[in-house]
Amino acid sequence: MSEKNLKKDVWLNTYPILLWLISEPLVGLIDSRIASYLNIEVLSAVGIGETVYFVFIWIFVFLAYGTTPYVSELQASNQISKLNYFIMFGRRASIFIGCISCLLLVLFSDLLISLFEPTTEVTLKANSYLILRSIGLPFYLLNMHSTAVLRGMKHPKITLYSSIIVGVSNVILSFVLAVVFDFGIQGIAIASSISFVISALYSTKVLLNIQQQDDVFDVLVDKKEVSHKFFYVGFYIFVRSMFLTLFMAYLRNRASLMSMEEIALQHVLLQLWSFGYVFVDALAIAAQTLVSEYKTKFHDYRNSDLKKYLNKLTLRISVSLFVFSSIFLDTLITLITDKSLGQLIDFELRILFGLSLLIGSFAFLWDGVLLGLDKSREFSSLTIVSSIIGFISCSYFLNFENTLSSLWMGLNLSLVYRGVAGFLYQIRD
Image (cartoon, rainbow, N blue to C red):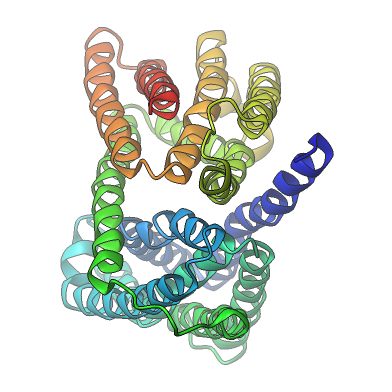
């Protein structure tokens, strides 16, 4: 493949994912604005309900991360019958897991919400919000599966189109149901569920149309092998997600033991950090497909032009993020919040934040590459170990200085391990 075609292939598989990752938090902000228009109790209830909802579904990210590279491998090797069975199996598993998850959230919503110790009024609102929103969970997971399959088939634009459908329908329905028809927080929750029903139907219909073009039934499929692959990869990513979620929750919770200003600052810093790495995250998600396809066709990824280009692109992004955040972090904080929080940003915290983006960019890229190389066990283990390193490092530094800088030093150490181990894993046969 020529350098021009390589760059085009990377770009075409990356930009729809980048726009999707950027659009998701924007829709959440609009949702929060509608909630705040009603009253502060509704906003608090939505915040609690969303936290429980997204922490709960994050553990099912394997429906996306484990699916895309395997689909790419099967398509590149022209194993169409096995591919079609894998898609059907994943679709059924997504709906089943979604229904079980919905049932669990409905049964234990009171317990989960009580962990936040809200007022009685907020508890009632958050409970109704979580139950109504959980109804759309099977469709959320179905949409996640369908778009992941389509990315593996090199149709990443459907992920973006699906996100636009969710965003636009959610915003319109939230306003109409919550404000115009005065359903309040229940209207916001119902709007979310309906939007994922619409999006799941769209992405699944597109997938079925593409499958019909390639369908063949003349090859026997080892169903046991396919289902084993699904759960084998899923198990490792499931465990990995648990550790990563706990570590990120730890970074927030330890900040909550400091001053009110530091709690607010840590929240904003993590939001900015999440937004900063979407550029590399989009590249990493695209790499799942590109690396898997390259490995299947040409076998040797280690010495490939694709590897060199992905590394070069990540280096440019990471250096740009480091320089920009090191210079303008306090300005960004002031623009988002107020001047008092911006004044809490000292030189040490600014550099530590920038380093986390510099180092983390490569750690995130290796995630996508390892999945593309079918190294899900290594992908999982390096995140588990890095999370443990992060826990230990943060606790150690906090014993000497109970500041946000201690938490960000611990995060950086965990990312250093994740980056180094990820690099070594991807070059190992």
